[in-house]
Image (cartoon, rainbow, N blue to C red; front, side, top):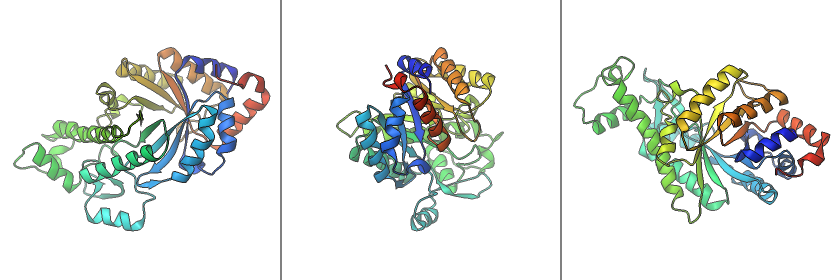
Length: 332
């Protein structure tokens, strides 16, 4: 990251980077000074993947980052059970706690957000992390349904029937596109995700200090209801302190369209721009990354977050630091 980035970071409130599960390898004594030298002030550290918590790695990150003036938000992957013990996964399957597609196929590695037991479980995990570690915030990821065709389990049907006071239902036909209850079902389904965010917010409010809550969200406005991720409502209702939109693209035109819509939807609330320096959808050069950062600042974002702290990005950071160390002694 060049001196231009640091100057932009002085204007924007957050200069962050995501640190994924596979980067948690105990080298934070090297990474923290490197990030600080390149102007970063925030790390979103993957502290939990579903029910599995990486407390040791989170503590190593905190020990290295906090003395460098870098805030750490605990990145929590919601609903996923990929790394959960087989016994736990088997128990959840037997108890009917997983999502299902509209054709009835059960999704073995995604918890059902309409099940209160799952909501309570994930809220408790977020509370535990925030209570036991001095993190600045909890950062929710995958806070959505797996797809627009998921969320059709039998237990979901029963809850929808009961809460909507319906006497009968042709399931799932009445609740898929063109079905008579499709619109009301999609709103109800999205409302359940909002309830899950609220449950996490309420759990964090039990702690005797300020713990921010944020969410990484999909970039497409048209996908928000389909995936139950109505993040603009979460901001409006004060359930999250800020949203980070995952604008992973190499196309300037697509990036600008997404960003303009997102800033408008956020209104006066805090919104950060997620930039895919190296993602499944984008691979940006340093110049392209700087260009997207500048665009985000010009369009009114309150900061940016780079995806993600991988070997290739670390090499760029090392090269940038070593080429001009005098310009990177601080952000301001």
